[in-house]
Image (tube, rainbow, N blue to C red; front, side, top):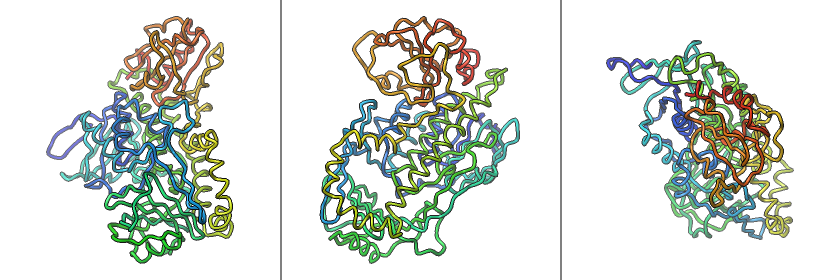
Length: 534
């Protein structure tokens, strides 16, 4: 319950989400749509602008699709972007749409500003009656055993809230992580990023980005500025000294310095108007654990990357999609809804699944940022000399669509698997030819008695989905709660069953659905059966 001075008791809350960036908004939405009563608070009175993130990956769009927000996101996105690589005197155009990704409905990178993502997610929450409470700051929080206790400073005064779970989505300087006593390993980068919105005496060459690798770093131009036509992103050696929080825009960069960055990159363009600029110090960090009792960390509160490969916003949203349904299922609607059920395996699975993924992302982004930004002799030579000499071969490599597609699979987390997690269960007898427990469910073409359809479209709703092969026995009604739906695939011969988690990963498979023991045990593990379903 929530106590508010002078206003009595407010409605009970299952999940308090701290932070209303993309991660917090996605977590609140996922938890709400799986039955939790959610409250989301943000210390800033207004949404943070300008945007820092500019790219949505295919997997991020997939996991958001069941929440009904994908169409609104795509309406604001450039889904057929290209990038012009300026390698020495040669300009090479690379298409980032219609990639060789047949098992997803989103075979492209999407250029989309963080502000647009936040607008769509916040509107979806408001439509569900969950407003973002801006100007409300978390002062302290702790796990009290039976519940979490948080103290909030609101525009109406100090307030105490007790609830089952708290989701810390409050960025690199996370109050939730600090109060939980969770270590924060890593270090600052000796390089920084420069951001600016500006007008140049040149027009955009179509959609997408222009990339200029140089000896001193990398410069990118996107026609996605919020206060001007162009957004500039450049890496350079950090001048040092005190500055803002890591990852947060700090002091403005003089126009003369920005013009020098353009000139050093070999770009013959003059800045006509500078609307906004900032230098952004960077770090790479990883929380030692993502869960401490009833307190959970997600997004930049759990891991902090360089901007290389565009992981920040995407990784945070995918954290939220993994965590939100678990908190909702574990919270329950009443004291008796989870009677006799131990949620430990379900809640522990978040750290056991997402932290190894974050470790691998850290290696990927650190390596990519070294190549993009380091001023050491080898990376400087690679950008300034080797890249120019290799320019004639780049179109040949880009023409190999499967090679490019594999790169996108890697950076967008389409290859992520939770096979070693506690929620990934192989039934007996084994079901061959189906995705393994823990793997992402591919977006195959299936039949359910009518014309062929894409599988992800059929599953685009919250909850757990049971996929029965053509000759499988019906699932016993006693196993089916309000969050479980059943789909029979008439084009898939056999008697097996595949259970798909709310985040689109396979949780259970078995070659026979005739006996309900294995399936029932798995559904009970995640609290999704009729007797335990929230």
